[in-house]
Amino acid sequence: MGPRQCRVCNEAQSKYKCPSCLAPYCSVVCFKRHKEIPCAKPVSSEEKSTLNPESHVERPLNVEEPDDVLQKLQLEAIASSVEICDALKDENLQKIIRNIDCSPDAENELEKAMGVEVFRIFTDKILSNINP
Image 1 (cartoon, one colour):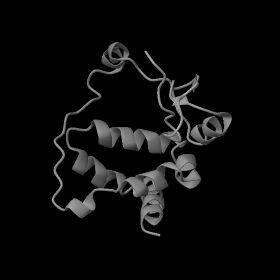
Image 2 (cartoon, helix red, strand yellow):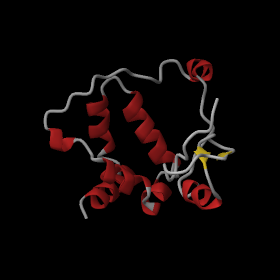
Image 3 (cartoon, one colour):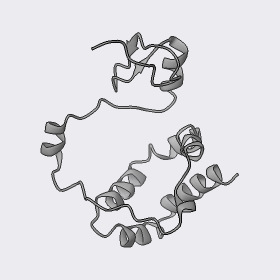
Image 4 (cartoon, helix red, strand yellow):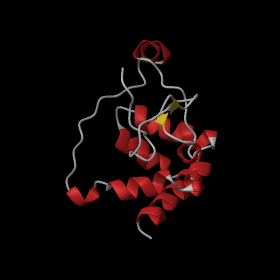
């Protein structure tokens, strides 16, 4: 396998791989920028099936309004927000998000989550990040 492009700057060829998630990067600067957002070792498809086979729920992506889909810059703003990354360290919030993601009735689970203060605060942080 030949050299790959740096996943951080997308400009140079990668010389290194992140020890945690194996993402290719080209320099110390890119490595530090990559580490601003916590990462983890990728899980192989074999490990995924043994971890929790019922945790993945297939759902079609139905979007009534194309404007409801976040743009790349909005997603990058969320991913680079220290405030949001810090909030995601909360285990209760992680559990709520996991419950929504794994539920066959995600809309109902989301409605329930909106009644929990930590989730409401989290969604407010996301909205203020994408609609400054």
